[in-house]
Amino acid sequence: MVSNALGETDWWKCWPSLHEAEMAAFKAKGATVKTLNERHGLLILEVVWPLNDKHITLQVGYSSLHPFCRPVVSSSDLRLPRHQHPFDGGLCLLIADGCQWHPHQRVADLIDEQLNKILRVIKLREDENWSDAAQLEEQAPDPLAAYYGHDAEPISAVFFSELTKVPNQSCGIAEFSVNPRGKNGAINNFEAIMHCAKPVSGSWFAPPFEPGWVGAWQSVVGRWVRLKRPLPRSPEELWAAAETEIAKQPVLNQSVWKLKQLGEVDLALTAILFDEEVDYGPHRRGDGWLFLANRSMGKGKRSVTLVRGFGISENMFSRVPAAAALRGKKILLIGCGAIGSFAAMEFARAGVGKLTIVDHDIVEPGNSVRWPLGRAYWGVPKVAALREVLLQNYPSTNVQPIFNRLGAATTRIEDARKADRSPRCQFRQLVEEADLIIDATASTECQASIAHECRALGKPLVVGYATEGVAGGIVVRLRPDLEACWVCLNEHWNDKSIDLPPQNPTATVLPVGCNAPTFTGGSFDLQEVSLEVVRSGIGLLAPSAYDPGDWDWASLKLVEGERRCLPTWVSGHLEPHARCTGCCPR
Image (cartoon, rainbow, N blue to C red):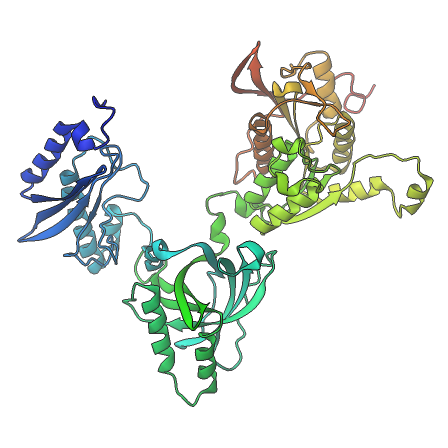
């Protein structure tokens, strides 16, 4: 479909025949149509729709990008327990972000098909016929809290454990920690951790939620209140309902007065609990959570807002099936330059239990252009910068930074005498403690020494680096049970029994402020190697959860002749080489 009027943006004017077809489809269903809005690309209709032996009124809103994007349909005449927005009456005719809408479809046909399906599902659920209902609808809960998100503050957030234990009471004390999300420590925007929900008085032995996140956290005592459904919509009405519930408590209970006073501090936080659908199926109910912030605005004025709440649990890794197998694993990453830094980020995202990073370099203006962190970390050791960012954003991974040059020698007697043990012993201990070693040093000296120690200690090793000019790259996996070794691979490269990837020796630059030349190339190419390093590492650590594949070395080609080509990997197995005295002794 091509518009014959590029200057026109109203779809019904671009394609008048499409508009006629839409109206004809409604008429064919026995519906009557009235146009409520027809400007700026937004067409809104009021449709009187026949439903069984009566008629209901629907509001139909077309996308300005119709017919490519889906419409919305709402109705104030229907009050459905499911598949309808509880506040604006929007009908869930299609799965959110699903590929169910087709440009050739007429909205009237969509309503006819999906509305009847929704009504059948609701009847099946009322009859507790869950197996048949599951065939017609998405098997997922429909939590009420999700419908409040549109009205919440855009930046502030509250985090809590989905396993939070709550006393069998109607209200109590909620303990928070608050960290400003704004300039100069202002609390206009904030993140908060709800540690626990306690009774008004007496002891409470449920373990608190203590994620140990970094930040300028301050303790704040708030409240929790349990309300019955239906809940009011606005934050002000929710706050008033909470105050009413607290006021119902016995006036002689001094702790109740404390709850009232906690609602009058500069930043008063109140958690609202209610009965919620937490999983699909019968009797899958639990606690739903909403969070309110009541701020003092000065001169006796206050403002009540809704703050988004996010439950934290192991389910947060459900999008990464291998994460469960990685939780107890330890990785030793040596080198966090343009390859290792991005690998570190991905390992932390995947939920690796511990990541020890060894590097001696500093973040500089020149090297940060192909590094994940920029100006805010110029002048900071790379290992320290990564630790801070990973700890802030992926706290499930324990990051140990080691600012050190592997294999460094010295002629300074005083430095040598300060050493309390051999650096090689320290390195061996790091290797012994790890489940996997990643070599991202791009240094032939380090590669040889790391491979030697890993083979001696029986540890799996992944080596990854890019060739000059980022014309290609190498990823090598050396398992403990592999007969061949790093020396064998280099000998195969030397006699060309295994081809090296392409390289561009002329693509070398000496950045300003740097005393060592480096090759040119952007992170958008280098990450091709980083990602395969991560995939290879996860495959070795969790082979039952992530297929490791069947190869020992992989060679990347990004250039063919003098032209860029699509990333192309070739791989193969590594056999012992006759010139390797370790694998083929004479």
